Length: 273
Image 1 (cartoon, helix red, strand yellow):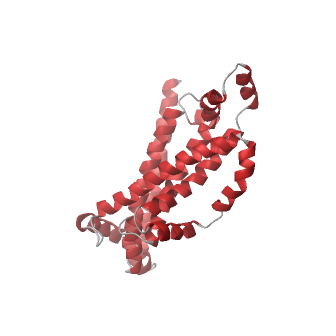
Image 2 (cartoon, rainbow, N blue to C red):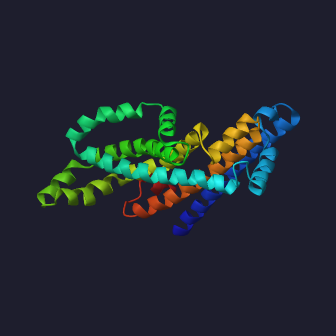
Image 3 (tube, rainbow, N blue to C red):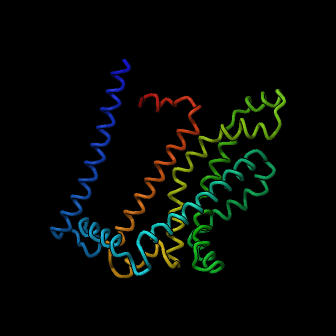
């Protein structure tokens, strides 16, 4: 039975990868064919072969703002710091407000009001206040990440089983012990789930800040390519961004597996296995 299940899992994995590769070949091949045949204008939509050549050129010769590697690292640095700051503050505020109805009632309207402000407006304010360095990009990335993590952490705390909380209080657990050993582990599934999309928003925050005003970064590369009517350059930078986000998603998945190893598999996970 175990051998049969293992074979089924391997067969399913092979089918998944075959579907992924087939879809990529279909999209890229169709894109290349349509632009070659003149059905789609490559001047506006670029061409896969041109994107690849532009990507090689960027890595070999860099940009007018310096090495392409340096521009990539600038965006990654801004996104990572913003992701860390936004995640940490989101978890702290989410757990604190989730446990205190008074704090949630007082601060809730203000949090919703700030969340309603368009992010591009916040980016402009940050650049006016802090210049075109890395600080406004980090702040914008942190703001985008904060609200995603905060609302998930807040809801995760509210979803903790009240019977479990009552039992640990009867056993004499302190407030700190309840938070550390019951509330945070229970809400961890919600928090980790939010991190999967949060890093993508951190990249978006960094890119938007760079488009608004920067000295280096992938957002500036995209903006320059756009101004020069270079769709291949835009798509080349977007391809690099996609690789970065996929790598971060893989690392977050590993973190999730490690932190939630104590959790029994869900029915969907059991069916997959």
